[in-house]
Amino acid sequence: MSRAFDAIIIGAGQSGPFLAADLAGRGWSVALIERAHLGGTCVNDGCTPTKTLIASARAAHMARRAGDFGVRLPGEVSVDMKAVKARKDAVVGASVESLTQWLGGMETLTLIEGEARFVGRREVAVGGETLTAPKIFINTGARARIPDWPGIEQVPYLTNTSMMDIDVLPEHLIIAGANYVGLEFAQMYRRFGSRVTVFDHGKRVASREDPEISDAIRQMLEDEGIEFVFETGDVALEKNGEGVRVKLTASGEARAIEGSHLLLAVGRTPNTDALDPHVAGIEMDSHGHIPVDDHLRTNVEGIWAMGDVNGRGAFTHTSYNEFEVVADNLSGGQRSIAGRIPVYALYTDPPLGRAGMNEAQVRNTGRPALVATMPMQKVARARERSETNGLMKVLVDAETGRILGAAVLGIEGDEVIHVLLAHMAAGTPYSVLKQTVHIHPTVSELVPTLLGGLKPLE
Image 1 (cartoon, one colour):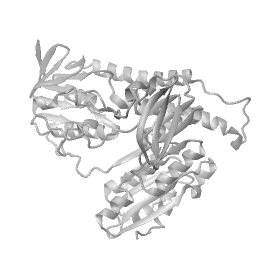
Image 2 (cartoon, rainbow, N blue to C red):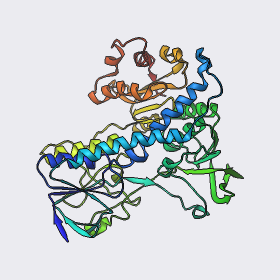
Image 3 (cartoon, rainbow, N blue to C red):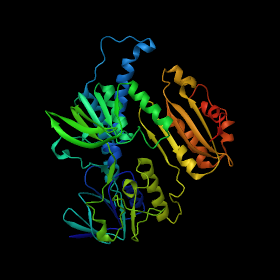
Image 4 (cartoon, rainbow, N blue to C red):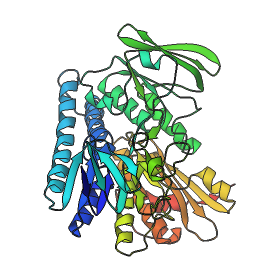
């Protein structure tokens, strides 16, 4: 059996559904194929559920700190993990249901559940039938990478996906990976009440960040009772009763870590293996990503790749931006991802907001630059809320005055970073922001003061 469409979209993450709706709105016949749940990682086992869980963890944390604010609570604070999970499930379920109803109401859009694979340059097989279209868009996303450590197949382990099914409190959660996913889960479960140990082959947490940012993140998490083990190697796993034993070397010395649960957060693998892109002549890189140009086009005419699968962003916001670029191009526009400013956040509490280049990247350009840092203790809003962890940092081109990069680790850092991002996108010199009057008392009001402390980057 074969069906013909104007467009086939494989995967319903943060690009696919919106592109499907856009094209259906133009009157195109569109097939949107999804093997699991609409919304992809973000809605089902990424942004939406984890930030919901983080909110519950923060509530527990602030309840324990109530006395710091002169508030007296009766009895000890406890966490009902079944209720926490139920709240998370309700938020996720509402998002999926809303997306399903929205897409299901479109006359020329056909939702197809199943695993898609290429059987020709313009042909896709799914659920026992073949679909054809002159335009095909890939939005299959990525999944947690499973390392090939000895014993991995013999032990129960968790990923960001299976972690969503947990409704009990791990006695001792061991996390492999001290980067963004691992750090968020580490703080979250420590606040729920678990003992947490994080190990990583590197020398510091959030290794993409500048050392002082990384050190500040580590310090605030250690202050909450999280243990870190760095420079690890020779990792092997074995069962330990109902739990797991992680055997490794740390800075060259043998060590074993015993825990009740193991969470793997050591990177992501693009979902291309079951897609058979080579059948359509689509090139892939050594990591399994599908390379694209600045307009999201693959090497095969009429086939595009958006979102995590192309290796050009791996964030919800970059994936949505890629839908916008593709939709614009299909209408005759010229939007592209060339020059897109990298921007993201780490949702520890307080969060880290990041935009543009870090210090190492600025140094590698060889251009003269200015730098300034400021501890969050100087921010009145942070002091008023007794949340003074973190710092701000900004890097500026010494010749043009344009902001090259910024990091805001601290209260509302994920929002404050947009103040700097807006000026970066507009290309205005930092002096414009420095001379702008901000509202008091806010976190953003200290950005002009931060810029007033710029000094040559030596």
